[in-house]
Image (cartoon, helix red, strand yellow):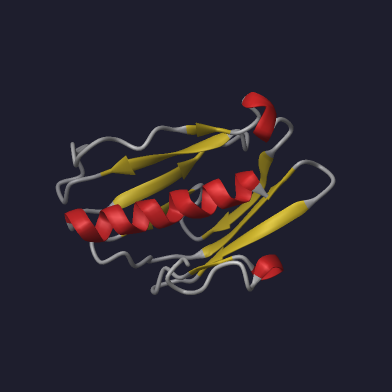
Length: 129
């Protein structure tokens, strides 16, 4: 559940930074499911320096996330989500995180960028409370 919460807030952070800095932010998932990074881009597709960077998250490191990995990514843009300068997405999809026995799914709506956790529908509302 902690890994799910961290992934949820990383996605929200990427979306918030995209709108705050009016510059696209990509969430790039490692092909082996071991983690993800946030990459901020300027409109000319060069890497930007928009405030302090968000550190990469490597699942499976540390006692809290041992055995946790991103088990399946079904996104329209391959292994990445791209939030535009308004926090919207051109392609949404699902991300499944788990430990081999139990999984949780995050659903990201196309265009709106709304992030939901269906298994825990009452945990967060549309604005992340």
